[in-house]
Length: 215
Length: 215
Image 1 (cartoon, rainbow over the protein chains, first blue to last red):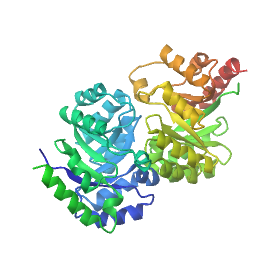
Image 2 (image 1 turned 90 degrees about the vertical axis):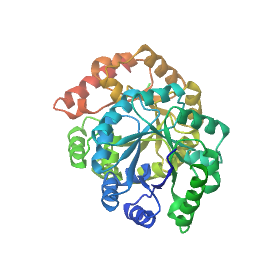
Image 3 (image 1 turned 30 degrees about the horizontal axis):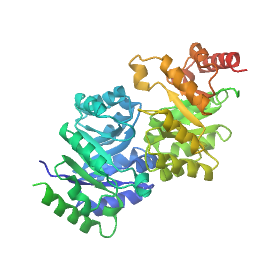
Image 4 (image 1 turned 180 degrees about the vertical axis):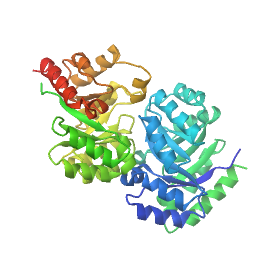
């Protein structure tokens, strides 16, 4: 099984702050994400700037696209994104429109799992040729103290069994990595944990755990 | 029942084009919406600019907020939005976080209905004090030829009965207005139909139909 990568989510509300964090972490992350907050704050200029600053990283634009799929995904891919996120709540026609644009740009679609989705929905994503999804505790649910549950892990294993690689996020810490053993994990995503003073040490601790459980 | 208002959705990918459309339509629309596409393309500068240009209109920022509710809604309200949209697929904690920020700004939350939502979800929104939602055909579903169905109208009446005022969108034309009679309609939203050469005539035709069915 391919080893999961480490992804930083940039959720600053000002581009200069995001640029600085990205420069600080570039040596120890594989994937750089323009978070929804940053994308709404600064527009596609954020994607363009980070693409220019980090030509060799995988760059994600976390739009959580819910409608207007063709235009939104084109905006992000033209600005330099490699992957964009599409909400699981989007109409399947929207998801298909995004996938079509992604194919034109050699980009990829990640389904961002929110709301009352079903495994039938997941099969429909796979039928469109999509093989990535993002599984997370909602930031607000996390703030409300809702942790990783057995229900989460069961669903993650089922998605993995469908061939979907998962990027996993929501208060990721090295001590939790073992929970996801056996799952096709594409990336582990963190924001503040990688951006802070101990970011490099956190990334190393994450890689140690990844090496232990994916080998 | 209050008469529905007319709302223009600005979904241009460049701010100058959106500014021009907004100036052209300001005399015959009540509500100006910074659409998701424009917000992602140009960031909160789009909201700030339209607020400055149109101080007396209701200004909506269509973020379809799905996570990070407190920060995202603060961004939009600080930029000058009166209403922001939050995805029905968001965790209830996210929706609550948005409502709390809205209250601080005397703003309002509109639930944007996507995905597999239930009437129980709708009751939870009402319990948070939210009394607006957006009901639409998805732009992509519309492109795929999916029309207004009896199922749509039943759900809209049920939401209306819960006390939720609906903004209705997705290829709105004057000839369809009669379909929504008896529903608490807050606005009818259109984009290209109002932005084009015949925009003023379309707005007048919409108002004629509104006067006929809400009096």
